[in-house]
Length: 121
Image 1 (cartoon, helix red, strand yellow):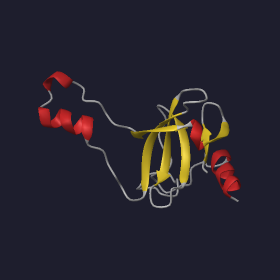
Image 2 (cartoon, rainbow, N blue to C red):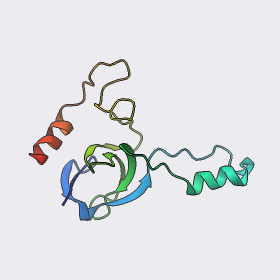
Image 3 (cartoon, rainbow, N blue to C red):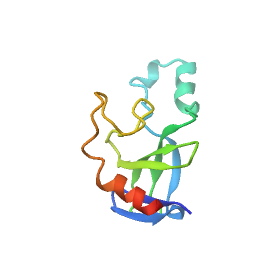
Image 4 (cartoon, rainbow, N blue to C red):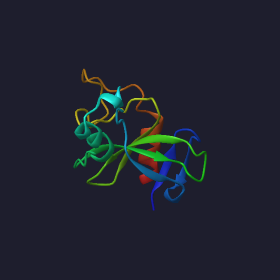
């Protein structure tokens, strides 16, 4: 069983309290009225299915009922981080170790990452 950290409740909860809602960070077309059928169909139905790091939208359905994002490795099912709506992920396909784009380690890799490692130990 997974334990997932809710960034709003700030506690670890069992996975049964959460529901996955699909890919995160999908940009709605700015002017839907001027979209072609193909562009609108792509927005509504097509999602990335990468092998490796993927950003997903989840909801804490039984707890605070808020939506948040999870960065997960689809090969290992490892949850790398959770973060609130509107925040940017630390872990990306370009920066799989959570480093900033200039190569310096992120200063914010402390509490949650350490907690994830302790929870797995």
